[in-house]
Image (cartoon, rainbow, N blue to C red; front, side, top):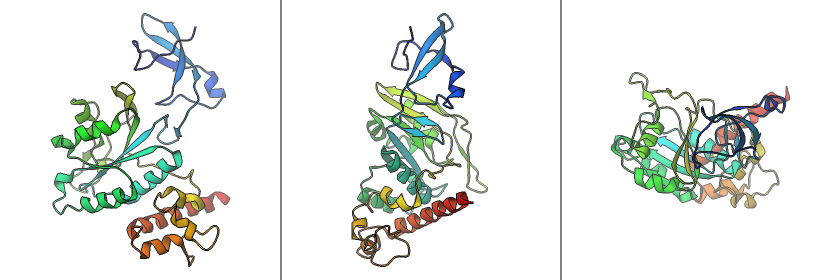
Length: 285
């Protein structure tokens, strides 16, 4: 009889996938629910013979069934990458999963610029937590937000993802991404995705830096639907299929003039739109 198991169960098995999955062009990934057949009880060996239906699947990095993405942004060293953050938030909306923004290293931001970032995203409707991972500040609040979710931690190298996870577990669970003092660029030392259990029904997936992060599954013409503060404003556009870039009488542009939408976030939307559009054009050739 096939046996189901996992980190909620009493036993952990080292399992390999059956060869049939190669023919079906499917591979088990972190977060999958599977059925296994035990082949060696003494040494806890098994084979995976069924991958259950996925509610969510992320192609890169490969993850399944996550319910919340924790977007870690460094307040300083490296500087906040809000273009990357907006790409990731749009992708989370596309996947229909929850987002949580963590502003880390707030103690390094002498000018307190992170407060403006927090205000922008909280106004939109995203929860934002301030943390100082190395000083354990904000860790308890973060733990509460992680409950009853399969959480994926996302963020560029050097933002402090690993330090946050180590703080949650109060021990060294991951390799720390280092910051080069010469060029202030993150050096990613984490090499694989790992899934850790915090509590019952609560997990953390630690992922490598998103240097290859891509949202190409989103079509440029649909991008505005995944900027949550744009949704209602689209109704004010004069033309069906408005791209919100060059058109006049655009509901989104009007909202910007009224201060209802952040101009900076709109400008990042335009950059992401152009990137998607250029990729689509290349595919035609």
